[in-house]
Amino acid sequence: MTIFTYILVFTLTVYYFYRSTFEGFQNFATIKDAYRNMTILFTTANFPDVFLPAMSINYFNAFLFMFFMLIGLYFLTNLLLANVFNKYEQRLHEKRQKRIEKRMDYISEIYDRHDADNSQCLNNMEAKSFLADVFDFDYHNEVHRNTAKKILEITDVDDLGRDYKKEHVQSFFKLPNFIEIADIEHINSFQALAKLQKDRAETYGH
Image (cartoon, rainbow, N blue to C red; front, side, top):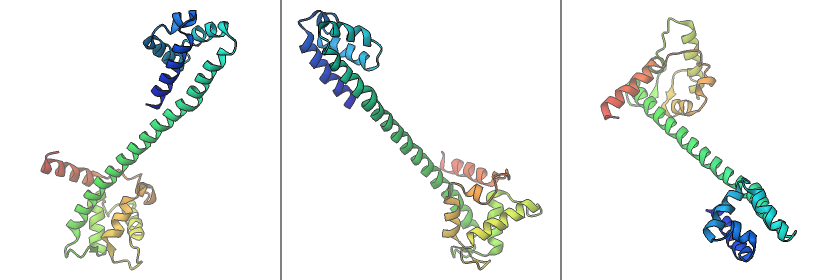
């Protein structure tokens, strides 16, 4: 809207300023023609066609079009670009938040499955079973065992080795880089998580 208003102000200026000249008859015969040519001028596509005839009338006329171009190209265009970039970042952030919320729903549901006494806290065996369900770990595999051990160490905030509170587990999975932190990018084992997502979609019809 700012750019259109800016062009409109200069459109009215050149229309009334040049309407009695050949330049006005050629490029700014009506307000509609003036607005169209000034919009094209904003993109620099017809710069010589508009600039040179005005300059032939009076050398100082050049400053009007130079001012229009400089403010338009180096301020308003950059302002538009910054606004588009900010909107893009905002949408990207919202998208990330939705992914995190969806992930938390899945993790919470799996956690509750293994929280037998609804205490919001898993013991060591329940925590291992929880991780096996999330990542489809096979504890006969040494890599899986080591990875599970690392995740348990991270989520065991109290360093007791036996209590894994739901809030701590959720905080870990809420991190955008939890895969890198736990060093599990080399483990292609998210089948349980994918299966749970599919089950939920079939259950709720989306």
